[in-house]
Image (cartoon, rainbow, N blue to C red; front, top):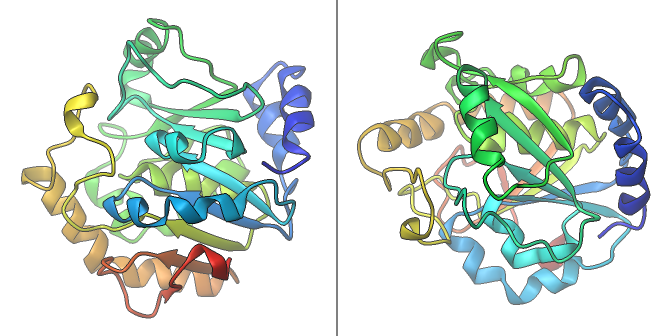
Length: 258
């Protein structure tokens, strides 16, 4: 965990509104490297090397949902929504210094708030995610609308990804001022995850049907992601041997290169 995160969390909890909390976080990690721990199967290949990220002030770690379980309290931000999520068990936090960021589907905010109240689940910042029926599938980020990842810098909401990587993790990294961003475990292959789907409620369909189509669309439109990063001077990299997205997106072999 970065040494400033604990103080940042204390600061934002003293602020009343989500707008104030997001504004306080803006550019707080400018010049730092963002490392996003995603939940694809290849994350399992790098578990031992995650320790190389511990207690580094040159990076900020954003773990996506069950990715937290592999980095634990070293995670500066926990990026969460209520899909692939156990509303009864939730997450067991090693400590409460991690900043917990939820995205709730705009069309289901009351219902998803009820899910969070069951355990209850801690939440430091939440924003509505603009989703159908407010927008169409063709307007989601992975269909080529990557500029929408900048929305969080101007207003307290985000745009449907459809993946949490695009609608919350990347927007938060960019809000924090990071231009050097590496994903670990972003695979875009079968829809499988490093966790078991039987262990969560509201699981995705494991690469079948709708999810298969979305994965194919992510791959086919990934040249737009490359263009977005080039146009915005973002050094975007991935650690994944299986990700079939645009080959121009930089691949690195191991965490040792971060």
